[in-house]
Amino acid sequence: MTVIEKLQEALGDDAVRTSAEDLSVYAFDGTAILSQLPACVVLPESVDQVATILSIANDTQTAVVTRGSGTGLAGGSVPSPGCIVLCLVKLNQILEVDTANLTMTVEPGVLTQKIADTATAAGLFYPPDPGSIKISTIGGNVANNSGGLRGLKYGVTRDYVMAMEVVLADGRMLQTGTKCVKDVAGFSLRDLFIGSEGTLGVMTKITLKLIPPPEAKATMLGLFDQMTDAARTISAIIEARIIPCTLEFLDRTTVACVEDFAHIGLPTDVEALTLMEVDGHPAQVAEAADQIEQIALEHGAREVRRASSEEEATRLASARRTAFSALARRAPTVILEDVTVPRSELAKMVAAVERIAKEHDLEVGTFGHMGDGNLHPTFLTDERNEAEMQRVEVAMKEVFQTAVDLGGTITGEHGVGLAKKPFLRGALGDVPLDVMKSLKGVFDPQGILNPGKIFD
Ligand SMILES: Cc1cc2nc3c(=O)[nH]c(=O)nc-3n(C[C@H](O)[C@H](O)[C@H](O)COP(=O)(O)OP(=O)(O)OC[C@H]3O[C@@H](n4cnc5c(N)ncnc54)[C@H](O)[C@@H]3O)c2cc1C
Image 1 (cartoon, protein in one colour):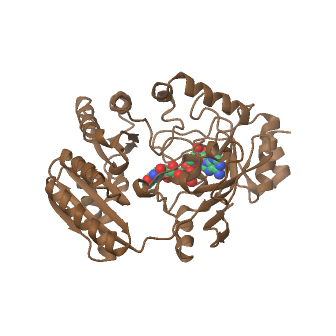
Image 2 (image 1 turned 60 degrees about the horizontal axis):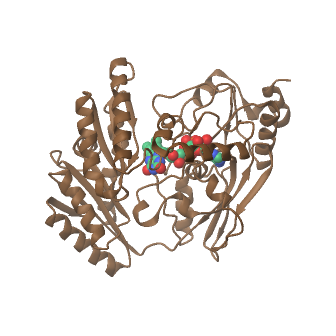
Image 3 (image 1 turned 30 degrees about the vertical axis):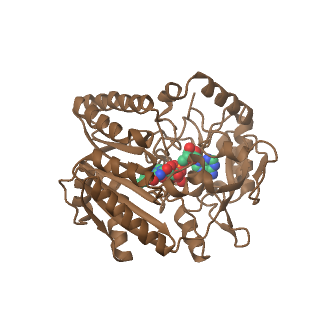
């Protein structure tokens, strides 16, 4: 019996997809240039089915690539050759909202937006908000430890994962973590699975921490003629002991693309635009917003626009939220990168990206989470132009090296997947990488889970 026949026998024919059309749909993730057809796609409807699929894969030494919505930007859910794609979008139930313990327990295929909305409906708040919030799944968010626009004040996905159920490579079930605020019983296996990109196990249930929502929020846009002034403003805000919930930026190219796309009324001759939001108690918010406005003007802002209504706040915030979509319209192939540097090195990093792009005759737009030092240099290119693609590759290597030289890292939130694999050893060094490989061997001795991702 073939693997596909075994899967069909165990799950029924409908649960196992093998048509050319189906396979091609699952050949990609959000990364523009990586693709590979799988052998089949399975869409389990229960945890028992997940365990059955993994047992069959383990017995037959068949690769399994777990997948949520496939919006990842590092090739993490791009199939390995001959693999089973294990797509979890049908495990999409909110299992419990526990208002006594402030937790929500969900299946991995629930969309992140649904989690945020369910928390809001219960009078609570789930802060992580990746730009893909409307389309990504919580399983993908946890597996990539995704960040978002509120990372500076509220942290990233890891900070909200309390417990999880995982199916291991051989089909065994593992429970790690509890609803307890304090729990130091043994190693924190939960933390190993967070950010493991589908290489250590398949998460089938996740318990998230919720918090009370902020009562008020103020939204401002800062417009700057110099990127260095924007960076100095960010540093000065933090030095003033203000921690905004959002501190984002767009460079000149990105602002021009956003304005062309979203018609927000932005001046297209600015060097930098910052989106600055504070939330909390209304009195504190008003005071912090005044301080931020003053700091920005003192540090060279041409203008600060403050939203006077929720609609206006949404409109101003859309300058940042539409950045990737706006850039994506500008070129056939858009390669979005994800480097992070200490906040103090941000202006240097942005300048280096511009210099590197110029030296290699490439168009780049940079935007990102300025408060986190996390930049997304986005190369606007065309994969049919081989010479240009080669120049992009060299430029990207230089961008990663610069980030590492400045004390930063090659990925702040998108993960390693296939895209960053060649750069991981250089960024981490031999010993951390070897320890990671040893851990992988413990969880997945046959190497069937997302093989070839993060490292070979
Ligand atoms: C427009 C846009 C904006 C984005 N903005 C952000 C942003 O602001 N911040 C950010 O961090 N990312 C962002 N991303 C990247 C992406 O959306 C996130 O990485 C997201 O978490 C991926 O979720 P997904 O459901 O699409 O996962 P997938 O892409 O399907 O999978 C991602 C990884 O998780 C693994 N995986 C998925 N589910 C499970 C599971 N249940 N168990 C084990 N492993 C699993 C996969 O094997 C893969 O390695 C953006 C992407 C787009 C297209």
